[in-house]
Length: 144
Image (cartoon, rainbow, N blue to C red):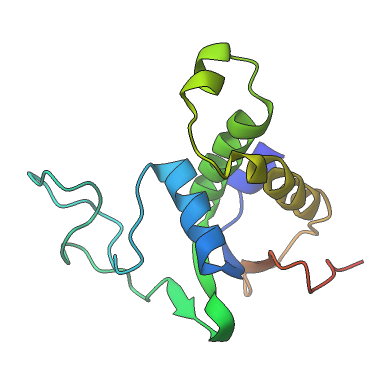
């Protein structure tokens, strides 16, 4: 599954902005919705990109109504998200379990399962259309 995730060009992930913030903080440690760069500012005490140092070629965040948003996530970042979700849901390391104080930790298992099943059903794409779409929304049934 991680091998498949790593080879994806990018995923257009549509979910509630709170879900994305949860995923981003689990995978990358920090996240702020106004960040428009993928490179952290050097010499800053503030984690993450705090000013425009290297702008994305296209804003990766698209806000929708009702708090939904679409975020473009690269394959390597999808791998990081999956690894952190697995750690949160299934880690047998007692130290990690005791140190994980996130009250939303119980979301790790269902999110990992949903993304994993999507990856298992993924058909090969084409070079002319490299992106994929994954919707995390219980109101929308996953494609059959």
